[in-house]
Image 1: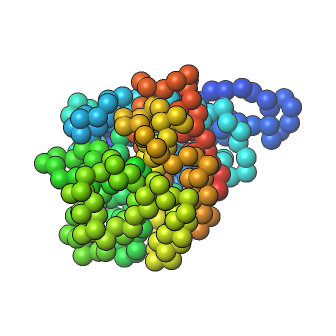
Image 2: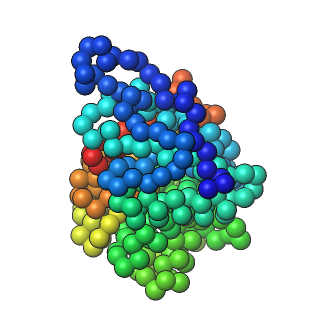
Length: 312
C-alpha cells in the first residue's frame, strides 16, 4: 500500500520492569510489530489513520493527523495483561495533501483484509472521516450480515457536502447501505441537541437513527444499547472523543460544553465489548495541539487499552 507507513521504533518505549517477574510487562514489550502489513488471524490490528483533511474541510481545528503515534506512545507504557499480546501494530495510513478519498479507500481495503483474515481492527484516527473508511471496510468484509454502527459522539455527522469531511461519514455509510440494498443500523449515543441543527435532527429521523442525548445518557444509554445489540450480528464502535466534557478531554476539534463523563461511558463500552459482537472499534478526533500536559492522550490511550482488554 503506497499510503502505508510502518511505525517508528522509538514510538514503542517505556519502563522495563521485566527484572521483577516474567509477567511484569508493558504494551511496548508485547505488541507485535513489522515492516510490512500482513494480517494475522485471531489478533487485533492496531492501525493509524493520519488525517485531518476531513476536519479541515469541515472548518474545524486541524491537528488530528498527528494523533496516531502520540496515542501509541501513551499506550506503550501501560501494563500488558492476558490478551494484550494479541495486539499487532498495523502501521499507519497517511493522507497525502488533499488526497483524503484515496487514503480512505486504502484504510477500507486494509480493514476488509484484516477482518476477512479473522482479525479485529482497532483504528486510531485522525478526524471522524476515519469512520467512513473503517465502517465501509467492515461492511465490505461481511456483506450478508447486520452490522450495527454505534457512535459515541456529540455530533450526528450526517452532513450534506460535495466532498467527504469529518461531518459526513454516517451519511456516506447510509448511502453505501442504500446502494447495496442493506439496512442502515446507526445509533448515536451522547449526542448534543445544541451541537446539531434541526436539519441534522430531521435527517436522523429520516434514517431511523437510534438517539440518546447527552443529558439523558445515564438514564437511557444502556437500555438503548440492549435494543441495538439484540438486532445486530456484528458491531462497529466509533468513539469520537468530543463526546467527553471539555474538562476531561480538551484535545479535540470541538470541545463539548456538557459532554458525557468517562465514567458514564465506560459501562456502555464494556457492554459492547463483552457482547461478543464487537468486530471493529476506533477512537477519533484527538488533537494533540490542544492537549494539556498529555492529559487527553493518556485518557484516549486508556480507552483504547480498555477496549483491547475487554475484547481479549
